[in-house]
Image 1 (cartoon, rainbow, N blue to C red):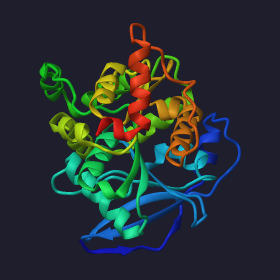
Image 2 (cartoon, one colour):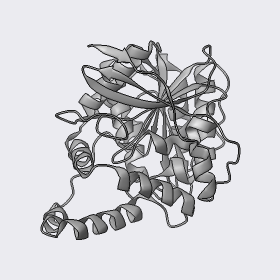
Image 3 (cartoon, helix red, strand yellow):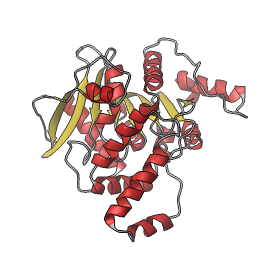
Length: 327
């Protein structure tokens, strides 16, 4: 695998852009855009946090968006980590690849980590990015110290394709309008802040139509059930209680598959939980990272699902923290 590093470029002050949209985050922070050449293709990424001694955290975005929608994590985690957010192939500033799939995306991520000489990293993936993170950990276990899977699943339920066939018959502009309208309803809770919806929909509108289609096909084709069962890294699973795209039931199923996992539900948030409740997501990530370093984690935010027994919750907690009980 041939790689080369491109000179760093200063990305726009994304925080300033968000502030004008109503974000309450005033403090500006420099976020650099950089890229590598990977087998003749440009792979772009955003980075924040300057200390070379700090641990690295890698952020992998979901379908139809780019590294830019991790703005709150790039800013909020940079005091503790060197934060890197990749543009997957065909997204943001990265070149596309001939055959997009979860596995091919994972290989691109692995190539970036090798080129940057990061060593093992904590990986956070959202939606399809969570599937990519699981594939990375399964294929390259030595590169991952822990996983945070946000609004993710191992396999999507089968759905009736009648709507897709019906949409395909519509004129392109009308099809796009209906797609974006439906996407907003599915991605965000009714109570989502307007600036969160604005940023998320701007990301989706900026994505190439071909990339969105490829992402949908990749998500429909994926089945990481076997890989999830074999994962050995500590894993935190996060999901919004009002997620309509990957509802809490899918996160519960995923938690049942991954041996050393714990599930936290963020009340009131939708699929775009990292935009709707960024402070909470950051707290969860920092707490999980502390637990990997031996610090006692906080479990005050675990969702008490009705009907879920105390014994089951204690077993899940123990499995996630005491690996020899699951071997």
